[in-house]
Amino acid sequence: MSDFGFEEEEFTTDFSGQTLWRILGLARPHWRWVLGFLFTIAVVSAVDSILTFITAKIIDDAILANDREALIRWVTLYAGLIFVSAAGVFGFIYLAGILGERIRYDMRRSLFNHLQELSLSYFDRTPVGWIISRVTSDTDRVAELVTWGLLDVTWGILNILTAMIFMVIINWRLALIVFAFLPVIVISAVKFHKRILTEFRLVRKINSKITGAFNESVTGVRVTKALGREEENLREFGGLTSDMFKAGYRAAWLSALFLPVVQLVSSFAIGAVVWFGGLEVLTGAMTIGGIQAFVSYILFMLWPIQEMARVYAEMQRALASGERVFSLMDSVPEISDKPDAFDPGSILGDIKFDHVDFHYKADSPILRDFSLSVERGETIALVGPTGGGKSTIVNLLARFYEPTGGVITIGGEDYTHFSLQAIHSRLGMVLQTPHLFSGTIRDNIRYGYLEADQSEVEQAAKIAGAHDFVVAMEEGYESEVGEGGVLLSVGQKQLISLARAVLADPEIFIMDEATSSVDTLTESLIQRGIEAMMTDRTSFIIAHRLSTIKRADRILVIREGQIAEMGSHLELLRLRGHYYRLYTQQFRRQLEKQYGVFGAPKPTPA
Image (cartoon, rainbow, N blue to C red; front, side, top):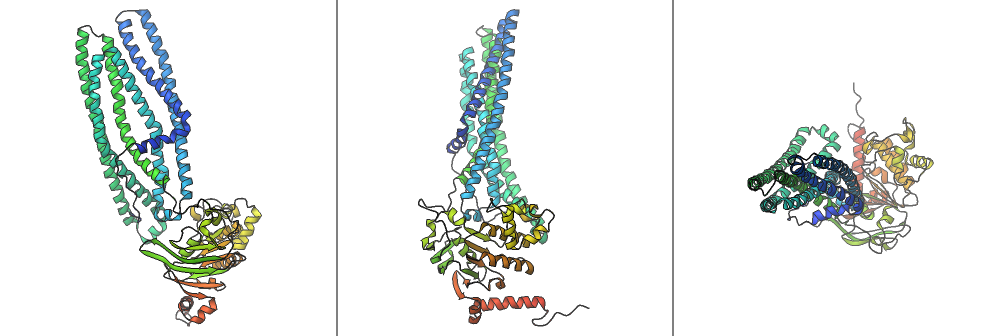
């Protein structure tokens, strides 16, 4: 559970700014919102600086000068600017919220669309938890950086710039003293940068493992409880959370240390200004209001720097998340349409595997020099030991994978010349483990043909043998199936899957071990539906129960990626080879299940 046989890619290169610019580029389609957002921040920052300057005027020109009219004038202006500032704060918070939701929506839509384009091999080697983590929590962090992170950084930079300008206006000599401390803060940030980013990268990586472990634990809860694996799962999950805690602790410690360093430098700067500024007041070079305003501008400038230290730490988290999001966005489908790919209009033709080789791992070949010719409309059954290559053959035919050697043709044309949509839209598949989507039975049957009306749905269900049990349910075709079809039995889910394939009316039909987990009655229903499906279309059937393939035109015994035997049911029985042994062993097991000793009835209990 803690491994999944998958290791996420490492991000160990120094941050060059490319990821940050790419993250900020997500806001480009919404540039009007960004401009409004930045404008309101600039207004608020300018108003805040002016209010501090007005405070100095109130002290020097009104209070100390005992000028009532000046006091009223400056206070009135101060109050008016307060309302402007309040309106600006409302504006940029509102715009930031809208901008964040738009960017989050764009990212998740792009990721979801990209996932639809990736090859099946990507999902075979990538745990669901990794993908979910990137599409949810990582996109959240990236969106927050573009909005609230951008807000804090922009506001901080503008506050620093306006504070520096007003400090120079008030007393340029004191301003230079303050500016001398700024490089120390910058150097501190550079020193902390690499270590903080490294720790947050590790946090995000372990978070993906936790998400994957949590996903497997929930989806496999029945197996866990049946095998009493709770304690072991807790131990493994605890190890993951402990690793994340340690990495998060180190990241938090470094971030927490960064802030006091900034505050310490700030305190020295304020102390220097108070000392030298006090001397200026004693000589008459500065006013009381001037030094008060100057100290306020120091705090006005240093407070954003301290806040930016926090934002800096958050930015490291977002950059680590951004790297992971973009790595998914940049994943290239291993199987894609060629530039000249076309839709032939039909794939119902002779199929030929011409000296096909295939491997998932280079040192572990699955098919070796595999050749097979299938006539249009022929039914081919594949049997043999687990791992022999039966499912690989139909996966290659469906172009979920492509041969690593040789070629597959349909109607005499290399099938890689066809578009993926042309092939996939004309395939019908019923798998060993049926998958239903949350919704109603009707929705699941219509999944591959959304334009189907109720009569077409019912006709497909009747052909598949599902209609009777559906109408017996309280809600009929509007009955909810639950997540993954949990509210239905395995047999019922299989019948719904078959009805879905019937309604799609495919040109090539593939059934992969569809009857291996169902009872005898359901098997007979599925068998009748399969026979209806095989009419006027090319069919491939992978069978665990050999009784379901007796009527196949040809039966292929697949062993170690090769065709060990081929012929009809009766022809293979006469050979007394692999198929004969498989068939007689299954027949014997069925009799032994029915009788206590082979050929002898079970004794009746007393």
